[in-house]
Image 1: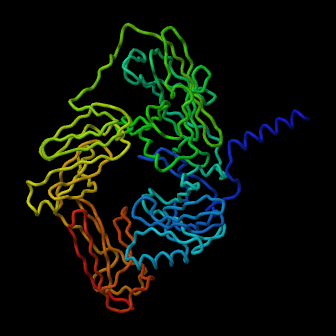
Image 2 (image 1 turned 135 degrees about the vertical axis):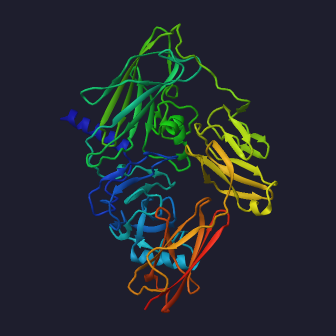
Image 3 (image 1 turned 30 degrees about the vertical axis):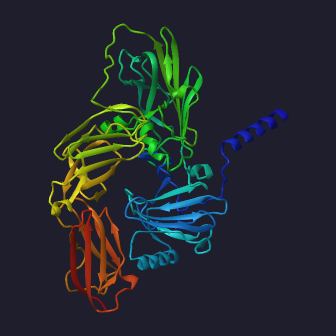
Length: 562
């Protein structure tokens, strides 16, 4: 009996040590069973997913409830990103976030619209005082939607600590049905210096993955020498959803000793950009598949736990080693991968090491300036993670700045001297990044100082000067000129811009500013007649749209309403 009691106490201590977050404090923010389309810390483009995405049955307008007592501490509305988002701070110090909303509850919606009309802006960010909008647990606060950068109807839900660091909501007792182990899609072995070899090659090797009957995996045996590392492409699936989700934990072991760990429990927004150094960035850009590196080379991510030599394995001649990877989801469903390594220094090198060199070498701990013709690039200290040779070519007004295969830590500046252009053209020029196989020019934020255009960029690649002389397009969508709209709830106008993109818009009826919500995915402006701005039967709608270089278009149309 004492032995059983001792085991129970040990188990309780271990469980408590693993999870110090309050249980049963936060309720489900929706009235439907929780099924996730996205999990916490999932690998996304340039960031980790900071919450969970809850399916809303492919619908908008489901009631969103406060997960616990508290007060609305922040409201943010933007065209992109989280779209319409609500932040609630709770007495225990945590903050919950509800994003991609369709609209807020009537009381909060009235509070927000009052501010929007006062500021004459759809986009805004508010920080109400603690006593302005108190909420109780399970109180209606909003309706689910698809606003901002959402790819479909769902509720993005977060829990953040006092330092605004997002934490996996599952740690607070959120229950998801999951008995399915993670799936391993591929595994790679990496020679990590010029003297390392894997199967006679100095380049990374994709290993043949062999599924076992118990759900685990093994690989072909490999020959290696020197410092090597491994990378894995893996996903998780839950029982009630077919989505490819992120895993919760990855650990690796060499000869039985843990040498590396990725713990997707909590991170900060300041470090989320370092995801590009966690994955094999070049592989992702060229193959669109994310391989997570199980070794650390100058990556400051807090989720990385480097137990032995930063996950780097030193293989010596005439030795044998067993490398294992354990992949776990939150429910501790596991998948294991085993790799047998033979230390062999082969005389016949199949692919020798060839160093890529150019006239320009980036020293990561120094500020670097590259200039040619009318183009200048400024790399600040610690823009990159490592030293490397960079391609730098200038031809006319086009800059070839390597390929986008090396991740950056911070932005760098690109500047073009445009003194040779006429004053008219200078006002219409912008810096663009050429993307895709057709080299389509994409606007990046450009500012002008005298005869110099300057842009802050975060990706290597090809940049050029582009010119935009075409005005934005504005078109009525659900009404005609001089039409009676007495029974209409919404007034809709489509807007678009071919080149530099839309910068801002302004809409009025009979000279009074009206709130028109902008959905960039649909290219639609929408006015709600319930805002009660209109007092006359004859109404003149006027919409002005401006692009990023200052071209603007004006649209006017009459309508009638009782």
